[in-house]
Image (cartoon, rainbow, N blue to C red; front, side, top):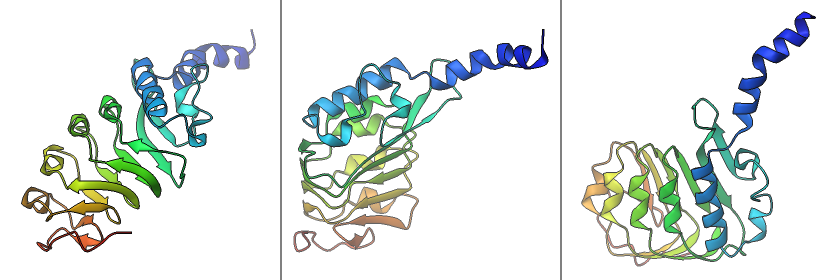
Length: 187
């Protein structure tokens, strides 16, 4: 037997596992796609393909139950419409969540986002999100960078967010240490 063939046999399980997508992550992502009306951004998101190969998705292959989604980027698409689906909270390995320049993404930030205990980077800028900025964001233990700028939020930045360990918290283009009203800044 050639040494090349032996190497292939030894590494084949790792190659197959690296290409595998966790079924629960895939289900959550397909739910997000459906909630956003199957916009063109999600064209590569099909049930017959591995979710780690989808546009806007990054994964960590180093887990035993299939590659886990660590980053979700949905950017610059006016066909993505509706509120942020609660299913975003069903991606437990997510460290980066970016919904950016989606002018038809509306409503409040869902509380399910607090289930993302590994989330460190939250970018929800240049959308049409509204209502008060939720104080529950401070319950995400790993959160260090938050950008909620250029939305339609009202009220003040919650004091709980000011306490987050970061100098990178922005809402409606105001730094988190600002206690002024947010209603004057819209995109």
